[in-house]
Amino acid sequence: MKQPSRDSQLAIEAAKLILDGRDPVKDRAQVLITLDHTIATLLLIAMDRDPKKAVQMFNEGTVPHVEERIMLFANKST
Image (cartoon, rainbow, N blue to C red; front, side, top):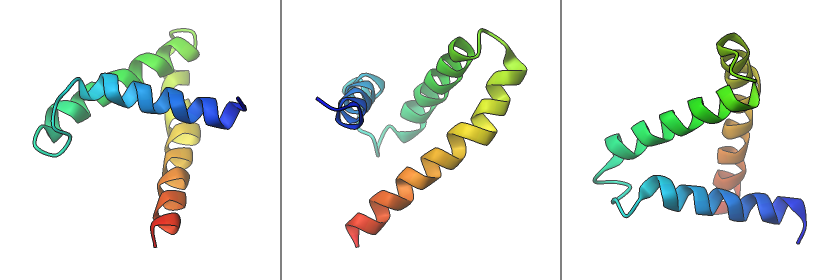
């Protein structure tokens, strides 16, 4: 399996864990809180527990890439 496909599978599995059986619309606030915790934890781990580097990676790396993926999805949906 190629890495992009593997990454997609990992993302789907992570989403299932974050949802934890909750309704993603009805329980949106709780789901997003769990997502926030997950993102912060992964960034801190990836940036060797350096909060400044984690915030920088979030702002300069993560947010633009997430926006790009959402736009790719939007373009495929139309």
